[in-house]
Amino acid sequence: MNFKFENIVIIINENLLDIFNKYIQDDDKKKEAGGILTGLIYNDKIEICSCSIPNSYDKRSRYNFVRSKITAQEFLTTRFSISDGREIYLGEWHTHPEQIPTPSYCDVLSFRKTIKTNKFYSDLFFMIIVGTKGLYIAIYNKKGKICYESSLELSKLRATS
Image (tube, rainbow, N blue to C red):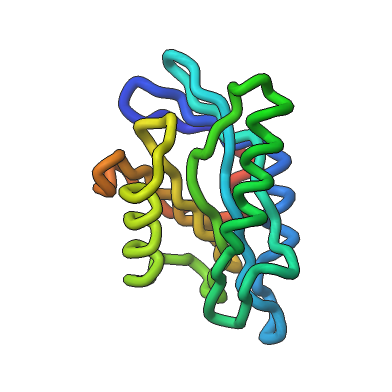
């Protein structure tokens, strides 16, 4: 999936869409899932190429997901290492049990806190929320302000990739 933000091409690798699809909350028994997003930054392109997946250390319920900081850091360290220091933290993803998802107040507060209280090597950060029929994408700056947001139907994602 590709789209343009200002003069930067944003690429979300197809393998991430496959991972997101595995965790869609399409029945009442499925819990929220999520993880971190990592990728590569070029002069005119940002490629989101990897994401962590839920593990036993995460706290999950039907309407809540809290990822483990320890396993997220392990994932980030591994991705950074195998890419010779090129693949970095770019944001967070999680699911919602709604057709076209929107971030909750807690989602926004938590994400802003993460951006403001940690040292990162990017100027832009991504929040992706996966619903049962749609995807919400927001781009935040280092100050925690939204620069871009959009909702897309999942059925149209494969057509635009």
